[in-house]
Length: 570
Image (tube, one colour):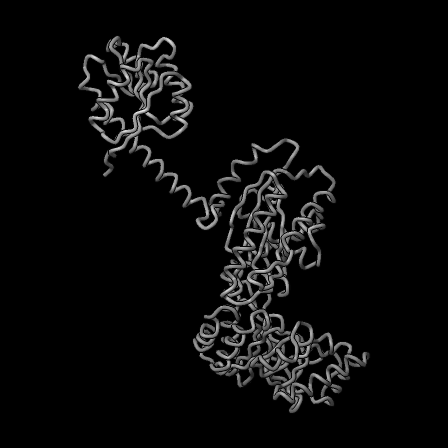
């Protein structure tokens, strides 16, 4: 319960100093610590109201230079919630009631001084209750609409703000929404990441405020800021607008030091135009992120941000992201299997599971496109779980038909960095009735070295459960011989780009031979991808390659077709 405090601030408006002293004496009797301020004209009243919020204002009724109506107007303008009590020896009850209709909260006749203190006490109590309610409401709004760590808008705040912005923009300007993703940098280690994030956030805010005089900042997530401004004119030459944004992105990506630790930001910016690329905040942010991904895939900076083709492809990417979750849940995905040949026996030794998706509107979408979307949208775990679960069940069907094959399953960087992935994968395999030893997990070079420490830990956990590990697409990423030595892999898969030029390019021939010899020296099985001719196969056998897969041997097949193919090959 709220109690009236012992030190209220009370403003007494009276042009007679003697009357003020009498009123002050009565107030101090009731509240010895009260701050009683005398305002004898309009300027003094305005100053007192602006200096600090008063609990109540007491006003003399009969002042020729400052009427109670003037006082009520000043209070309504500066402190509309502050209560006003009218005090006069001339006012009748009818006049007092009329004054209350004009905004006065109460009136006290000087002939009844015993009413003054109770009236003041009541109004102070009521005013402070209202003030506490407003503070609670403000705190609630801040909790709902603002990020507690930065004070910027949060997602809900941006949603509410955008809904009221469109009607207030300048007629010759358009709203522009920018996303700035700062999740990627070359600094590693959990002990430095929080400092990097704080420092990068400070730099982002400073650069954005330098670039745009008017801007709204939103912390959309831990690693993403959203900027809304109306200072971009879409009627201006596109090159001019793109140059301005590209310059901002360049400034944001300047290297800096944290305690002598070099940080090279890899910030990614995207753009969306409210009204053209969406209406709601989430829709616009998704589009801006999609634009950033398209630009990155094309190797472009923000100079291409206004290219219509970029936004068309961004909208396609947005449709893929929105449909992917439904596709996973609704079993719109299918698995094909490409057979793998053991070159030492000439027999089928395994298959690789390849996920396929037919979008209800966009048609068949290649894994290279929707897997990238899954990683960026946080759906990669759900997609990976689906593939492991269904591949294990289907492999069990092959075993039941007498084909004791292993199955290679791709896993992404996002899955490897999830500490729960190895245990969850093993549980999914076993729940299908399969031993994990029949599953071989494939990881690409770039995914493996994205966070070496956590990757090694995840791969060791997979191997401890009985599965094998293969490095996929070797030669196309960033792996060095040192990385290859550190990673606990069993199989090295030579990328098809080397196999394709194997017979025509002497350098490719030498590289493949060197990789096979190196892998064997490390005790690894060598697997070649993309075999399309008998000559390629024969050359790889001469080089000592252990396994192969490719169109020469078999295209990816659905389960029923694969069963028939395997039965014929017996």
